[in-house]
Length: 574
Ligand SMILES: Cc1cc2nc3c(=O)[nH]c(=O)nc-3n(C[C@H](O)[C@H](O)[C@H](O)COP(=O)(O)OP(=O)(O)OC[C@H]3O[C@@H](n4cnc5c(N)ncnc54)[C@H](O)[C@@H]3O)c2cc1C
Image (tube, rainbow, N blue to C red; front, side, top):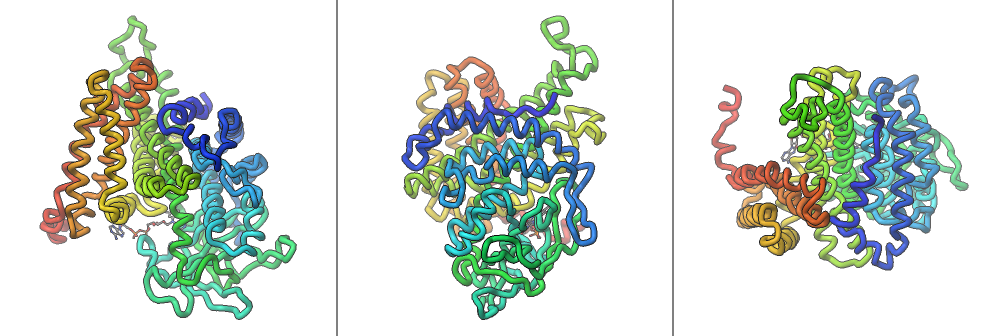
C-alpha cells in the first residue's frame, strides 16, 4: 500500500479541534476559504503521494555525497524539489509582496507534515528555506529582501541556517566565527560551521546561508552575535548568479539516518556577507527562523510517525501468525487481531493525533497572533512551541520504534523500510535545540509571565472537561482530574525560585503537559463525533490507557534536584 496523505485528519482537526475557522474569519486570512483549503490540501496530497513518497527509499539507499567538492543528492531529489517549487508551495505562507501566497502557517504546517511523511530528508530543505524567508521578511534590509525573497519563495534558491560550531552546540553563545567590515557595507565572514543541513546541493540556483558570527566589537556570549546573509554565489545587480563566494563544503557527515539530507561541515574563509538586522542582535533575528523551525521540526516527527504507522498497519493486515482470539468471529486472521499488536497500532494512531493537534494548535495561535496582534495569542504560541517540538519528535521516535516492533524480525531487516523511519526521525529530538533544551525553555522563559499562558491553557482544558462531566463522565472525569494534577505541578514549578529545581523535572513536565493536552484534544474529537465513531473509540483508548502516564510524569517532574546531585559522578562511574 503506497503512502496516503492523511487529508481526512487535517480536515477533521481544522474543523472540529483546533479552530481553523477562527483564522479564516479574520480579515488578514479571509482568502483561506474552505474551497481554497480543500484545493490546497488535495493538490499537496497528490504531490506527496505521487512524487515525493517514491523518493524516500532513494534517500536512504543512495545518500547525498561529495564528488570533487560538489554535493550530489539522491536520485530524484532535484526533480522532487522542483515539483514542489513549481507549484509555488514554498511561498504558501510567505508575504504576497515578494511572490508568496500569504496563507496561514497552519496550512503550511499541514504541508510540512505531508512532506515529512513522504520524504523526511528532502522535506528538511523547504523547511529551512521557509524559515529563512520568515527571518528575512522580519529583519532584512529592503535591498536584501528585494534580492533574496523572490528567489527563495519561488524555490529558485534555497536557504540554510548556520549556528553550530564544534565548541558551540546548545551553547550558541560560545561561537567563534568572525565578521570584519569590508568598508563597502559588506562583511568578510570567517569560521567553521558544522552539521549544516542542506549546506549544498545540485538543484541549481544559489544556496543562501544565514550565518551567525561576531563583529570585532561583539561582546562574548549571545549578546555579541550578529546575523549575516552569505550566499554561495554573489548575486549580480540584476539578480543573476555572479562569482563564487569564499566558502566551501569541507565534508558531509556520516549519519545514523536521514541520509538523503546532506549535513555539511562548512568553511567560510573571508566570505562576503551582509548584515541581517541590527549589529549584535543576531540571536533575536535567528530566533525568528528558529521558532518557525522548532514547530517545523516537531511536525517532522509527526510526519515520520505517520509514514511509520501506515507501513506498520499494512504489514499487520497481511502477516499471519498463530491463532488470534477473534478468529472465526469477524477477525482478519492476521496479527492485527492479536491484542498486543492492536495495542501498539492504537498507541501509534492516538499519539499521532495528539502530536498533530498540539502542533496545529500552535500554528493556529501563531496565525491568530499575526491576524489580530493580540498578545494572548502570541503567548499561547510561544508556550506551545517547545511542547510541539519536543512531543512531536518524541511521538516520531516512539511511533517509529513501535512500527519496527509490529514488523517483528522484518522490522530489523532494512528492506521493509520500517527501520528507516526510526533511524531518520531520531535526529529530530536533537537538532533545533535538543528536547532537553526545549523543556528548560518551557519551565523558565515561557513561565516568566508567572504562568499566565500555562494557566490559560489549563483553565481552557478544565472548563471543557467540566462541561462534559455529566454527559461523558467516563472520559471527562479522568481528564478533569489530570488537568488538576497538571495545575498542581505547574504551581510547584512556579514556586521554585532556583531554576535548576525546575530543570531537574522539565522534560517529564513537558511530556506530562502534552499527555494532558492529548486528553483534551481527544475528548474534543469524541464530542465532535457525538460520542460514537472511530475518533470517539480512539479517545476512549487514549484516555484510559495513555492519559494515565501523566501521573508518573508529573510526579517525576516535581521531585527537585537534590537526589540527582546526591548521586555523585563516582556513583555513576562505580
Ligand atoms: C543531522 C543534523 C543536522 C543538523 N542541522 C543543523 C543546521 O542545519 N544548522 C545548525 O546550525 N545546526 C545543525 N545541527 C546541530 C544541532 O542543532 C546540534 O547538534 C544541537 O543543537 C545540539 O548541540 P550539540 O550537538 O553540540 O550537543 P551538546 O550541546 O553538546 O549537548 C549534549 C547533551 O547535553 C545536553 N545539554 C547541553 N547543554 C545543556 C544545558 N545547558 N542544560 C541541560 N542540558 C544540556 C543536551 O540536551 C544534550 O543531551 C544539526 C545536527 C545534526 C545531528
